[in-house]
Each structure stands twice: as C-alpha cells, then as structure tokens.
Image (cartoon, rainbow, N blue to C red; front, side, top):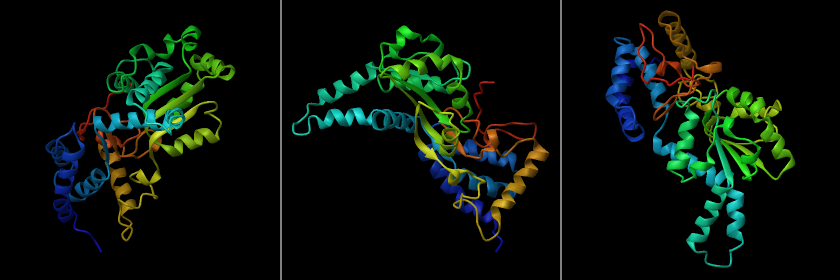
Length: 309
C-alpha cells in the first residue's frame, strides 16, 4: 500500500513541533520548517523522508549534556570509590558534608584533559572541560591541555580522565592513544597506582568494541555514558523503527538521497559512512547526517558545524 506523503507530512508536523519545543534550546520550529521548505519546495516525497528523519533525530540540549557528564563522572567513573566510602558507613547516618568531602577529594586527586585534534579553542572537548569547571566545580587547576602536562604534574594525581563530547568512528581516540604525546603518561601508569579513563558523553559503541578487539585501547578504561548502536543509525538495516518494511521504504529513501547527493552535492552519510541523526545544542558531530550541516548552491544547511579543519 502506497502512503500519501503529503498527508503524512501534514499529520506528523505537529509532532515535530512538540518535539522541537521540548528538546531544542537552540533551534526553533520555524527555522526547521523553513529549512525543509527551502530544500524540498514542491517535493512531497522529500519532505516525507526528511520529516521521518527529524522525528528520529536525537537532540541533546545543554542541560542533557551536563546531566550526562555528571552521571558519567559520579556514577560510572567514580562509582566504585564512592560506593566503597558509603559502605564503610553503612551502619551509621552519614552527614552530607562527609559525602561532599569524598567527592571533593576525588576531584582533587584527578587530572582532566580534553581530547583534541589540534589544541584549538573551538574544539568540542574544551566545552566539556568548561562544564567540568563551571557546572561540576572541578578545580580549574586540575584541567590541562596534554602538551602542558609533565612528569612532575602527573605525580600530584591518582588518575587521569580524558573527556570528550562524543565518539563516532573512534579514529580520533585511536590516533590520540597511539601518539607519542601520551606515551610518558602511559608508562607512568604502568609502574604506579595510576588509572587512565576516556569518558565520552555519547558514542557509537560498535566503534569502541572494534578498537578494543583490534588491541588499540590497551591500558585505558573507556566509558561511554549514552551508547548508540546500529538501531540508531538512520539508514541501517537494524533500524526497524523508522522505515516501513512492507514497501522497501529504507531502500527507496537511500535511492532518493543518493540522487540528492548526485544532483545537489550533499551526502546523506557522515564521516566513515556513519548515518546517525544527532544534534547537540551548539554543535554537530561529523558522523551525523551531512544534510543537517552541509551547504551547496542548491542546499541550505540547518545548523552550522564548527569544524577543526
């Protein structure tokens, strides 16, 4: 049974409006509607596909990212230390200042660095370290760039946490971990009671698994707070939520956007052919759909991507 694209679009547009109002603190519904109409004027099939993608897009507000950071640090990275402390007082009523004191001690014993490509101020890892200082009250003296750390500094801490907003293909983490710049810290950790953790707020867990299987992440604890899988990829066959099975709709959508790529110069897959629909409050990863951030003479972008290129 063929679906009426125009009818579906009119029926579901209010759902998108509600989604945007509840999750987007950075885009208005009007901006999104104007973007759709500009790129798919008088094209009901295109509007239909794009609306489906938008309804399955994961929007992260600034508040969402801070919550993920808090959960990642307190519940995932430091959970064993905090639980051990609490268990030692299980038969007593613990004053809150005791708990707060433990958190403060953990912060003071931890060194933080952002995962960066080129130490540029606009790279997304810097935004995470900014939230560590301003939202989680991590001492600013405990946050460094990798090139500022030496042996004398490392000896003042018991652990290193490398923070990142997201991991897609995993190439950036792989290159970072095999670089000479981090080698002296890895050697220090081997001979001392010193742990190294990579913490990403959001990430494609399949990439992490492949890196581990290849032996590319030895001696580092990798924590991804919100894990994305193939079921979250827009055009992947394991995503059974977005496309109708009875009409080969996924294949039709791929064919449609292949034509868009040929005629309008905008790819529908991101870096390393990943096809997640993920938008952060003030940035968009390169493994998200390029239709959101690329522009050409015949294509208007929805959100400008801050690039490290």
